[in-house]
Length: 483
Ligand code: C2O
Ligand code: CU
Ligand code: CU
Image (cartoon, rainbow, N blue to C red; front, top):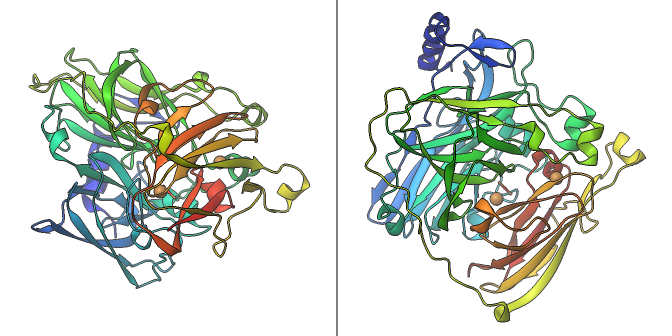
């Protein structure tokens, strides 16, 4: 299925070329910012029903070629799901692909059987019903394929979308909140393309070892688009939906902006910064004033990357343009930048009932040539038939994540929003908030405080893993049950 509207739009943009030109992967052209379709489901009181279809299609991403893509209710990427704290969602997922897949609700606190991880596969032509109560505060969550050994490729082809959770208190904050107008989703992904326009997934040893990084950045499926801003104050919900790249984001004019949210929702206070680091799977909400009517460009600065031993060995990082904001004709916003946003419940250390150590390792040497078990946690590679950890429902634990490898790994835990309580570089910016992913640098030790929700299921596990999808797919993942 060709998305006809996008195809025509691409053609029009090409004809308008001489006006403004953006360099993207060596090509000259400029495309309009696309806001993912919003899906709020069918509501009957507190019950909200979503109908999702995982499908394949063709998308006009490059100027004059079509790219085979995967998507949810559309040909590329997923529609944005939106529901509120207190709702009970019923999500029917149909798999129209000719391969097995799953949909995982990343960042959601929910029963294990509704999680959409490797233990809830959806066969071709099959359907899966995921039902759960939304018990957490407003946040920018996301969803993506979690098919065992295939997550990297399926997400790369497009199986990812946003899941926005709302609540009463965030509605009362006078933040920009009109979806697609002053509240803008920004899914950042980097891709490579083959000559025929198809995505080029893993092609080399560095792709396999360090994760797949592309040289072209897409925002909501469009290469380096331009957002025509309508309001002078914008709220951007940034998702690093990339397989492996960590972004160091700032605007080309170094303007300041305010971080208001992290993976798990609002920070207690807004934090003024000029740049931020966003690892794979992390989200951040920022407020940005464009009242000056200029055209700032969001960029990835490779010079900010702490060169690890690995990246020095296989240096492939360079500066990248993410997208541009055209604020030439904005209207004055009536929204504000609050200092105080919310209060996080303080968990006293005295209630910590258990501590666990997670050791991340990459085994270098001859094994890697033969595709052996390179990636491990606590010396073990992922085994769907092995439960690695047993956690008590409702308990509070400290997990220490140690990285004994030569590169950074974004460590993710299902079903929880944790707090980072210590790390070598100190805890700053969006890391002050609730997190479900934390980037653990080479030789670093990070401690996180986790309160597990009350859901229990002795049989069906949740996952914890590195969110560099090529590492996850090759075994840097473990399983825990909550009882
Ligand atoms: Cu975003 Cu286990 O996943
Ligand atoms: Cu997850
Ligand atoms: Cu990793």
